[in-house]
Length: 409
Length: 106
Image (cartoon, rainbow over all chains, first blue to last red; front, side, top):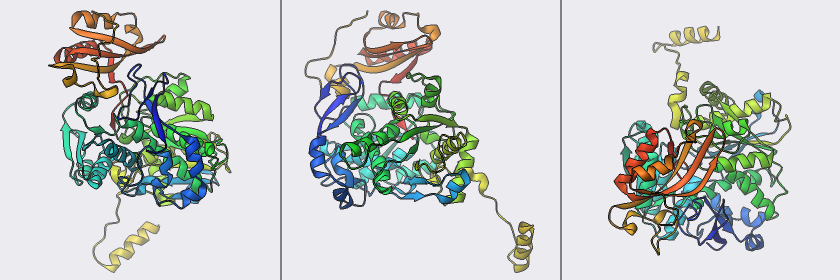
């Protein structure tokens, strides 16, 4: 880790050596990795990035893990799609979609887990672990397989079979916990305390979360080295939202882009929107909720980075909005039927909030706007299964032609 | 019993590695966040927790507003006693969460 210097508490600023811990021993505030930006500025440039690997590891100097041999299944450098048809439907001329559906395990989690797995290996851990209801489980299991280390994945006992298979195929030990969401939370927290494992979003969280910065770097690079005017980001813990903002500012600090004036908009589902609720109430104190939404990948009732996400909204003159389950479903369909991108429910949340921001006039037609689509729709097919309408015919040309005449009419 | 002093054993690694083994026997140390709704703010729940159960409470950070309060604290004691204490606190209507927020992700 040549460019990382320490861990610093985000609350009391106490410094710690780089180690696998996530909470300040004094005030229990979250720890964040610090970098030697002067040293990075001497080696990092637009050219050095463009000459790097075609993955998120092209930004290795700004990632807290040894990049000489990362645990890499080729996450990142996903397409930034100019969305003309969706843009036309919404009245936007400069709309771009960051399509993270196409990561190796079909969600943005591959970015954070690649950093976490590499850091875990650097620290000498022999076991990678997580608690997940879907995307994270698959990504952690895949990276552990790639690294050749043990893997424990904790899932709720009632998780859908498709999601179980999506993790099980990589060969982890899957532990199905019979209990409420809160029970699983508490148990995994205690297991992380007791066992010397790398729990990607617990003791390795300061390293893990930094992987999301690459979503900011890539958007800027793909826009021709500039920050967008608006970013719409789905939020569960709020971590990715804060890290995209941090990533844009790091590029500016390194003189790779001009000062970002990006307005950061946070997108949540109405049944799990503690960050948006606090934003709307004008307070910084998150009120935890019990999530109830079809957007299960965003169902976090007590978001770890909610307070910091609210700060980013404030600093960037951003906003926060929530959408209903039916708006999520409509937006998934709109995205698929205008751009050919089948997103999971979190993508429906992003597009739903994008629509709201456009209708309210917050986003102007010529504003450069990046909407983050963070996971693949094949993971949450049940949300849109009503689209499976077919035209039933006998196996004859006549039956077919009668049917299409009826369709055309 | 409420004790403000730090009960951490010498040499323990900071953060999440103060394990049961380091504390010896069946002793455990658990870090939790209590969230109180407005009707509970005036009740001395943390004091009662230390009095009713053999658990040492050590507050690290807190914020109390008109309609809600939260406290981040460490609980030291036998694992079973801590579990019983947390169950009692939850019965009183307090929300109990892991300190770093939810750890189960999508």
